[in-house]
Length: 186
Image (cartoon, rainbow, N blue to C red; front, side):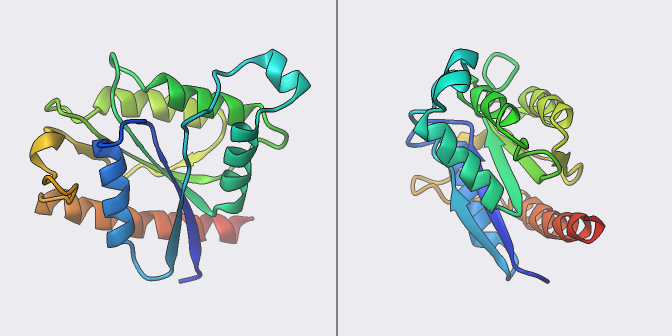
């Protein structure tokens, strides 16, 4: 397998975010040949066309460069009020309005973690809608929705659920295959 650079994006800003824990777990479970960098959405401003038209904020420029440098993106999001957090939506909106839209044609896998039993399923579907509209190539399966996340990670942030770990491994292999397939089509 050709080396794959994956950018992870957590839709949560919390220090003890279950979604950030899920991304760290995914990195540890990744197949050989995958390397990871992490986007930081702290300091990312709300999308503002006036800012876009004058001076693009440094945090946006950094995120744009990270997405462009990545071969694939892995996003983990919590569910806020049946949807994705505002900071993640702002990140997508900024990226969609950058020159040559860096997510256009980019392979993307998503997962979600929530303390609720549904594991962020509604947020994932909203995220998929946004990503599909901007022509990101979203991996369809396996879907990972980590319900009751507070029971699936220990106090050190380590995943304790074997089925979720299995799905993560499968998703990462599928993302690698998807990324390589899309590379071959270019």
